[in-house]
Image 1 (tube, one colour):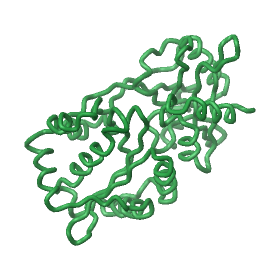
Image 2 (tube, one colour):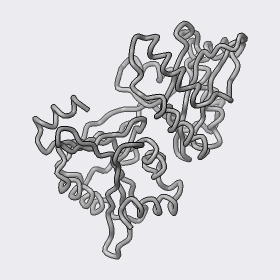
Image 3 (tube, rainbow, N blue to C red):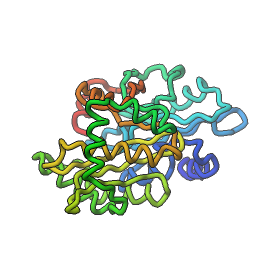
Image 4 (cartoon, helix red, strand yellow):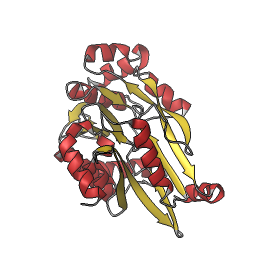
Length: 308
């Protein structure tokens, strides 16, 4: 078997021990029509000790590795009994041998020990999380009372959940939302539909909207999750109803639905102070993760990073 076939079997064997964004099915879905592969590290007995899935691209003859769309983290998965330093060194050495112009991946917040990744620069970044959503009353109590709680209570009187929203309807709504802002939707509708549909089929996604009494859709959101964490990946708002608190109501409804299915809720960023403040009003706390970068040819690598 090649590395991808071996990794597929590993994911089937390990199941939920491998996080969402590293799962074979996730990579195969978000890298549709693109090339992806995986590096494996082994111990002296030949057992797999670590894996690093990656999306590889080519431009003007230059090879690079970056994050796939809608994928907050890649980076390594480590076997519980692995020697992490040795496994990291194996993965790092394999990456250096690939002749990449640029390597850039976000490592999950659980990867805090970067020993073995010499030669790769690490930049600390932040996302915002509610670490434990099991007690929904405690979660709601942590919401900002004058804004988030008030918005939710007001919207609960006029908006109702739509649990039958289809991936096709969401993708169209998402594109219309960006067009209303005078911007192009950077995600193709076919891509969004495939990712959402696959996650829903696997029971690892929630697609939810809220509508008013006339049936008009005010907001919609797609969240993917595993048994550790949920990730708010896609959202769209009605162009004329975006300030009415529908987004806050959606977050609250989804957190309630996921409270028995996962532990944490990740708002997906951001380093932007305004967005960070907005998420802090939900009681979300800053959570550090590392972005690792390596340019084989720094000047060319920095130029390439602007093109991709």
